[in-house]
Length: 229
Image 1 (cartoon, one colour):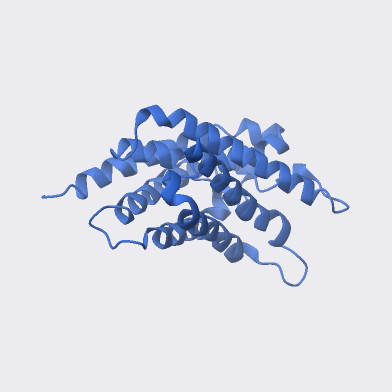
Image 2 (cartoon, helix red, strand yellow; image 1 turned 180 degrees about the vertical axis):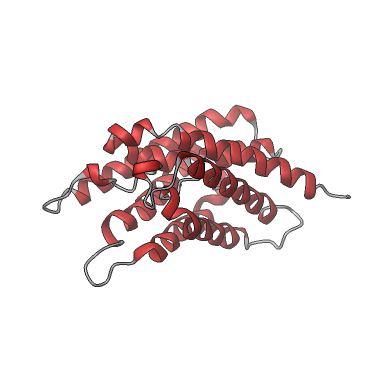
């Protein structure tokens, strides 16, 4: 239960910090943090919670990461469902807190996006479903390669959260214009539930692509990172 609690808290922090920066601070008058600030915020959430809670649960905070670690031989299959449940619940709780904060401002309209992920008309840059699918799959694969490599016993010890946090920042710098960046089904679900409508209709892609990418990344790392070859 401590591990599930750590995954709940870590995912809560990721969604509140990352999506909160997008909803509350990205375009704040005169001092908005913009795309770069939101990308950094997501990276910082993972970096800080990986150091804070990684020694308890492994610091997944993402169902796709849990699946990828299982495929990479680092995580038991029996823990996938409870980890995923804890992560989604943490994300939804964070979405609820963010909704309460954001709705305290006059003129707030959740239908404008609420940091949800989307494609086509709901992509920040108007990118197609195909572009979104490729982006989320490829970047999720790269994310898993970084995670598996940085946490390998042969890697320098104690630096994995930095590499992982910076990788997530880079991923957001690339893909915010395309999908508003998911690579994390829990993160997508946590805000889509409050938007409903199109966000829920397109949510399938932000489960399917990150998980597929995680499986690909795990397979690639098992091939290139196998000890003794």
